[in-house]
Image (tube, rainbow, N blue to C red; front, side):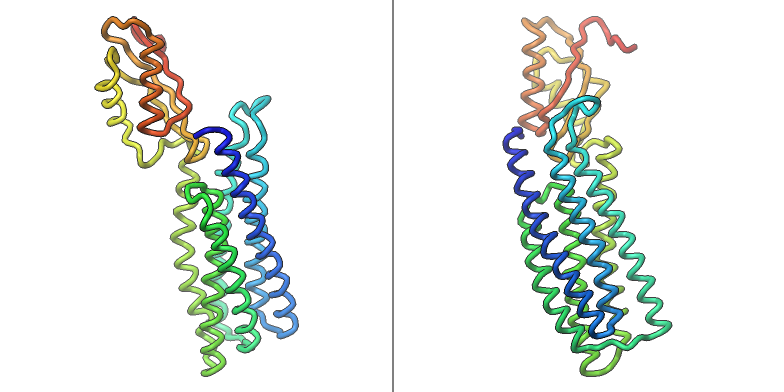
Length: 294
C-alpha cells in the first residue's frame, strides 16, 4: 500500500472520528442538563458513559494525528503503531464500561430507583439520532483500521444504550415497571462485551508482534520455494505488522543451485510477498555457505 494512499486514508479516518467526537460531546452535555432538570440518575449515569466515549474518541483522533508524523530519531518506523495502542486502550475501556454497567444493574435490582420515563424517552430519542449519525460516519470508514473499529464500537455501545433506554422508558411510562431498565442494560453489556474482547485480543496480538492471523506461514514458505528458482530452504522467518495494513517480514533464504544474480532472487521473493500476501516491507538475507547466525 503506497504512502500517499495511507496518508489520504488517515486524513479521512481522522475527519470521521472528529465528526463523531463533536456529536458525542454535544449530546453528552444535553444528557447532563436533562439529567439535572429531571433528577434522573439514569440519564446522569449515561452521561458518564458518554464522557468515557468522548475521551475514547479524543484518543482515537489524537492517534491519527500522531501517526502522520514522519519517522525519526529512535522511532525509525514512525508513529503508526500508536493507532494500535489507542485501539487497545479503547478496548480495555469498553471492558471497564461493561463492568460498570453490570455493577450498576445489580445495584438497581437491589435498590430500585424512580425514573422519569417521559424525560428519559425524550433524551434517549435524541441520543439515538445522534448515535446513528456518528456510527454511520465511522462505520463507512476504513473497516480494517483497528483505531476506527475501536471508536465505532464505543459509538455502537451508545447506540444500543439509546435503543435500550427508549424501550425501557416506554415500558416504565405504560407499566411503571422500573426493573426493565437494568435488565436491558445487562443485555446491552453482553453485546458490547464480545466486540470489546475481540478488539483487545486483536490489538494485543499486533502489539505482541504476532503474525497475521489469516496467514499460514508454513504454506507461504513452501510457495516461495516452489515459485522462485534457486531457493532451497527458508528459515528465521518473522512476520508482524505496524498496523494490520502495514505488514513487515524478515527471513533467511538458502540458495541451493547456481543463479545468475542473488539480487534477482531477492526481487522475485519480494514481488511474490507483495503480490500474494500484501507484505510491502521485507528484509531478506541470502545464504550460500550456511547460516551466519548458527
